[in-house]
Image (cartoon, rainbow, N blue to C red; front, top):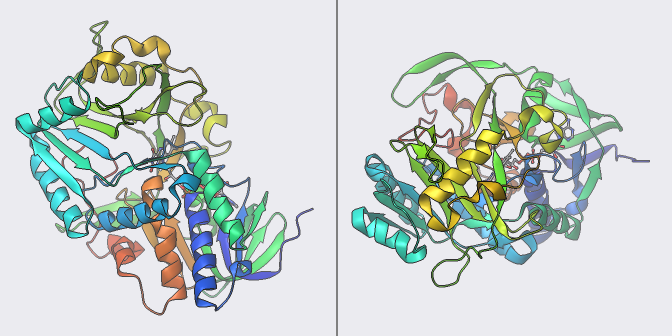
Length: 445
Ligand SMILES: Cc1cc2nc3c(=O)[nH]c(=O)nc-3n(C[C@H](O)[C@H](O)[C@H](O)COP(=O)(O)OP(=O)(O)OC[C@H]3O[C@@H](n4cnc5c(N)ncnc54)[C@H](O)[C@@H]3O)c2cc1C
């Protein structure tokens, strides 16, 4: 029988990557400063740690963002991964992103912004870009690639290992984790959250953290917050009555490959990401045209594979403001990757690397994919949404954002707001500071 305490200084709802990271960092920073201990932190999950998107992701960590304030957040995240890369399953193999000529100005801007915060990367253009790719992967087929960004500090994490590692850090610092405790509502006192109602009783918290991933629209509703809003961008344009939350389906999958998949010098290759907006996807074996543009990423599959192979993904699919969230992830019949995804990713793999030509038969037929709730500009919101409630809504930037928990703990325990978090406030939509997209089809800008 679960017996919840009546109150705790910090009550965190949701044990995904953000709830776990926040709980661990609160407990660790409190112990270091001695105003309390991990016992002051209660972490609730309606299922168990990693039951949401965190448990099914591909775990890619990269910093290719046109939203420049995200560069510092990813840098903090890499610091968190490197706190104990073995425990978290982090492979710092780097990240290589390929684009066409139209993306060169964006890549140069990204490079300058990353360099300004010490995130070490290189950009190659034209023939240099193509040579760079061939040096890493001798069988690389370049098509219209004209620019490459190579991030040295990025990589990927194993998702189950990450959940185990973050949970262990929480336990090491005395965080009380309660699985099977579902938050069902909030008792308000004025604008403050007076108590959190659960299926196991009521708990009060001095500060409550909302870290519920795809379930955030349900909690937004419980808190009586508006589901539509006007969004004003930096150029002054306003979109009226935009949905506060929009669901997308994310497709990822696995392809067996006994290769092994190494670089020319025998290393685990960087995560590879190719976005070519003017190049169609054509299966190199069947000749079938599958799409009018390329958006794909892959890496060595290190977890949930049972055999050597590749894990990767493609462009997510827009669902709209409504989705059935439970059952979540692989348990939900409606939101699994379709056979078209398997055709697409394996065609892309063969299109860009000769070694993968004809690999469609090796696609691992199993449940893949899940949904996520995205913010109005597809960029995270990390802010106080009530005087005593902090929300981390990552808009599915996920494993690139593990540093948020560290920064949020610093903000809550310190006396000053943390400057890196300021651009991600909720009021940016009303203030003309919503983030806008650049040269990409992707929602992750
Ligand atoms: C298929 C897929 C692939 C992805 N691939 C990548 C990738 O390669 N790289 C990357 O960076 N990101 C990726 N993402 C995104 C990333 O997984 C998410 O952004 C991230 O895991 C979200 O973490 P979270 O802590 O916000 O939420 P979640 O991991 O969803 O955790 C939320 C938790 O809240 C709990 N909860 C919900 N409601 C309640 C309630 N009422 N009471 C108590 N508990 C509750 C849930 O049980 C859940 O455990 C992917 C996402 C999907 C779906």
